[in-house]
Amino acid sequence: MRGSELKYTLFLIKRNPLIMVGFMIVGTMVLLGVLAPFIATHDPEDMVFSDRLKPPSWKHLLGTDDNGMDIFSRILYGIRLDLAIALAVVAMVSLFGTLLGVVSGYYGGVIDEVIMRIADVFLSFPYLLLAMAIAAALGPGVFNSIVAISVTWWPVYARLARGATLAVKEMSYIEASRALGGGDLHIMLRHILPNIVAPILVQATLDMGNVILEAAALSFIGLGAQPPQAELGLMVSLGRGYMRDYPWVSLFPGLTILIMVLGFNLLGDGLRDLLDPKVRRKLL
Amino acid sequence: MMEDSILRVEGLKKYFPIKSGVWGKVKGYVRSLDGVSLTVRRGETLALVGESGCGKTTFGRTVLRLLRPTSGKIIFGGVDITDLSEKELKPFRRRMQIVFQDPLASLDPRMTIGDILREPFKLHGGFSLREIEEKILQLLESVGMREEHIYRYPHELSGGQRQRVCILRAISLNPEFLVLDEPTSALDVSVQAQILNLLKDLQREYGLTYLFITHDLGIVRFMSDRSAVMYLGKIVELSWNDDLFNNPLHPYTRSLISAIPTFDPELKRREEPILGEVPSAINIPQGCRFHPRCPYAFGACFEREPLLEDRGGGHLVACHLEKL
Image (cartoon, each protein chain N blue to C red):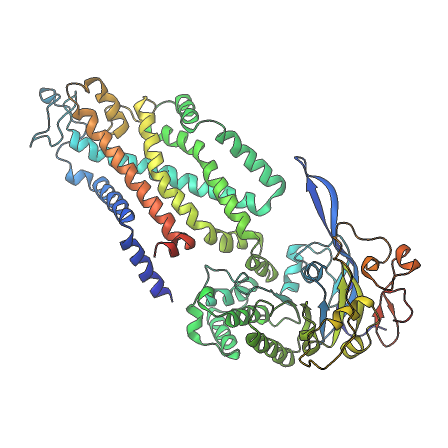
């Protein structure tokens, strides 16, 4: 029964505290990001030079940076921006990569070879290096860093989807659908895609954290968001000159990145366990 | 000479290339079907019997054009469908269907039974949503299942129910011809009988023609009118069941029949063991393909491939022996 399956899933979630922690962290972060304009105590780009490098206080909850901008408010907007970047990248690459992977695995032969060799070219560079090169070529900025990360990231999904498609396409229900007169597009969309969605969902969740890290890294080296934009990587970077005397300038944005990435990783790992029928039974 | 045939197959071959190396160089072929000719008459059940790996499943898939034949001709309902494109085949798809061996693997695990049964109607169009719902309910009820099953997923059904759903999906568009690819070998014995009876009832009700693929000779006798025995991609004997079981003319057929288990411990039968193993379909023996295992092999068997010829009354045999 579907109902009991749902109950069992809820039971598993309760039994697995890490997925709960991950879920709560991600939930909180999303909430903070969405509600940033309402929670923030200051304008994130408002520079008050009389309040430079102030330690945490009731006026500035997490202190101020070297330009006198309120760090608490900037972190909220930073979460919002980084989540938006991660969502844009992951949505784009998982859709595009998955479609290519399904086509590649389904048709095989020359189409498969061409798509996979192109994917190999991208995978043969270290992610960050290639993303840096592309971002540098396009010029710094949030939009360009989204493009740069996406271009380097799709092969992960293409490979994953191809592998899953190869397994699914040998099942009798694919042949049954063909015997009924189902065309290639019908089979790919109605039978293959729904059956490979679980591993892709897991990968997408884990990648939310990875993309946040990479976006922060690009900003850190100056190829992503530009000051005075509120972006977590950029904030860490800008505060690093003051680390010794005014640690809060870099520390709090850095901690936020850490918690956010940790949250997505815990959630992704938990989802993997929930969606994998073999692990599912073991958790009992 | 021409009886009312629904399917005529002439010299059908299906070779699977064996590729190796980076460039996928073809270094040989698996000759799954090596020139099969037969005719299925309208309304009959023709059983196709053979060991695993003899090509019987490949034959079922190739005549439905789920596999592209290497050469030969498939004539369905008087039309040559050998080289039709997928688009041209679509109207034929609803006239010929298949039921697979493993019912769980042939039902999409992400679809409910309702979705699965709606699929054929949606693919071929021309039905209103209400008509479809009425039809699938009718179908389910006709095999003793209920409305609640529409909302179930395949893993929530029993093996027999799953196979019934597969059969319903296959007959939903009123096909004329059904390939049954070992439809009961994944099921419990008690359920097997139910499914076989269901298939017989459906055949009577809708005038279906069956190509029944199996390795179980016990079932063959119950199900079919005529039977064809396949060995390494070729038909070695084909006849009416009475004729085939009482008077087998090919040594291979005789061995198979002598191996059917019986319930009578007193009954003494001549044991006819087959020598050795089935050769690989990559290296098919010269001459008669059965000669390395045949206790009666003589000169001609090593040199010439025997042709499938009529020994009277529609009893076809491919053997050099005049009399067995």
